[in-house]
Length: 308
Image 1 (cartoon, rainbow, N blue to C red):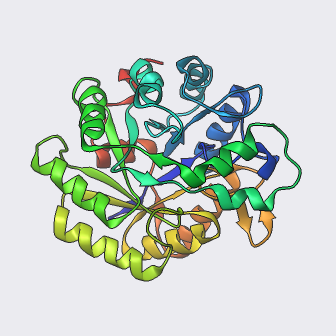
Image 2 (image 1 turned 135 degrees about the vertical axis):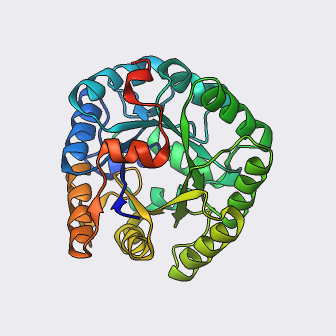
């Protein structure tokens, strides 16, 4: 591997506005954060949308289309639109924007799982919006649904019909086996962009032993047909992605995954996190990939073939 793909997940659907004043919500904020992250060194922008009135996660295509063209005009970074959305959304909801925008990349969770956010509610006493506390507390009894039928539908609709490649999000060991299953069915073709995720409550824990085991399992199941990336949730972000990079992985950072830049210090922007990991990579004699280099590595269709 000659260069490192830095993915920046700009806002996500996990964190709520009461957790930090720096979470981008409006189309203008998401645009500015995404463009600044690209300028700082991110070659892939992983994007969710928010209701501009109250910051709640939204799947409406109109909310995505309020910022997607602006980002494309201001940056050459690869746009990666979520198909995970939020665990409270239906599959049709989650695909509404990707179906319209036809991006170069989409994320795809490789299985159903508990997605437990409720411990975060105990840390907040001053709520900005009335939806936040029930949203977090309700995750104690919430399953994110992505069955094999769901996965096949997304791969067919977004991949085969619309030419997107995928960030295959694997939160646990079983997800790697599901990815192998879809490769055996011929629905997933190399190069596979594998995002291994550590530290989300309901998925595999943020231990270095788990990172090593996930990589060894991926090697056994996928051989040379995958491009590996690491995501660490919360305070484990920089330690895990740095360890992954030393082992040969690409990296993902951003306010979707972690609200902090250091112990007890909120990140003021996504670009701050991108700049930090790019500096760390540089000190390890590793260089960040450009968007065009990323497109070549991942076999993407190109920014001229999207619909925004």
